[in-house]
Image 1 (cartoon, rainbow, N blue to C red):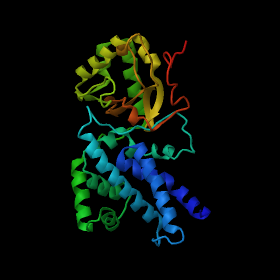
Image 2 (cartoon, one colour):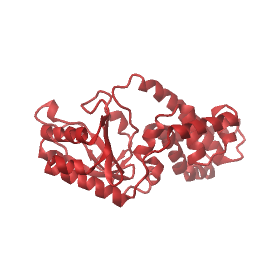
Image 3 (cartoon, helix red, strand yellow):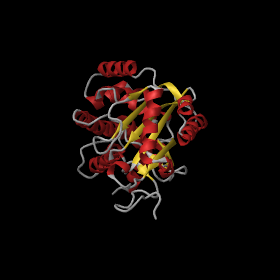
Length: 319
């Protein structure tokens, strides 16, 4: 193994992981694509390798993008039989993320907030690759054309169509604005005051759940502040006021969110598997919440207490 080549690759890893996560919305797929790119690079540069690499960064970007395109195509097929809504895999960290983890660099980008990634899910795979590579990472259209095996003019057209599709996403807000809005919502929830909850919600508020039928969540998107508030008040009545105590404050894609590592109640209905709650704030109000409970979507959890023990009582409040 060429130690110099490995060092150069490792210096590229955070950028490549950022590209791959933005392309796929999947931590598992992003990490797999980046690792596969290293294996291909090692083979290509070994004695008897077939590639002459003049621009390592461009070669790696093209390789990772092609791998991500394959994974996007596979994900599109899986979504046809997916139960309920499809959300990106969240990146969940403590408030002091491990700087050695390349994902720590990924969550510093506003483009990797959940709301921004959800917008990209509306794009066809080739559109997403063309749009993200050009608009987010400044890759020239001739290089994108090579990645997609099309002409540069076609690549330019794909990016243009994608731009029209994803127009007007929720603008990112500062951490202070986000924290204040989410904090007011949680305080109102703790008080169980419907009017107070409504005052914290955006007029276009919505709830999106993702469990793929593995546990209960909102199968359809819940729209409007009244339905939003009553949905969460219903959960409070089901699990009791102590439900909020089971939620751990965490960073979800770099901003305040919540997670439970799971708990066991007296019945299945009063129990919950591990799940993540993310938020989007708009105009100083909570605009969206995302309930991610599909265990296959929790590969991006990077917490000291994760994964939880496989069995036992309420794991947030052990007796």
